[in-house]
Image 1 (tube, rainbow, N blue to C red):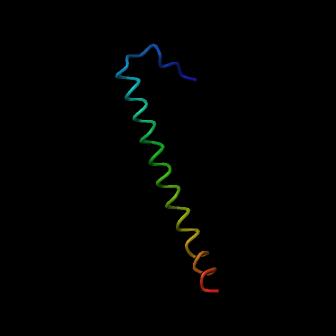
Image 2 (image 1 turned 90 degrees about the horizontal axis):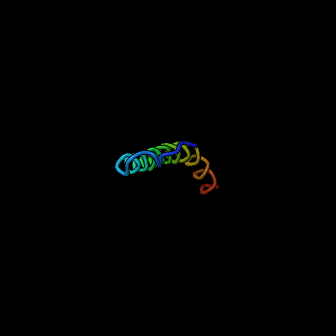
Length: 48
């Protein structure tokens, strides 16, 4: 684990904001891919 306590609060805040933005991007891409895969399956189920 990286110890960020030695850095200033501005650096710690920047790392936190960067981590949150990275997580949001990964979730956005992941859910988009999941929707592309699941949409045809849901359509088949609802039409059956």
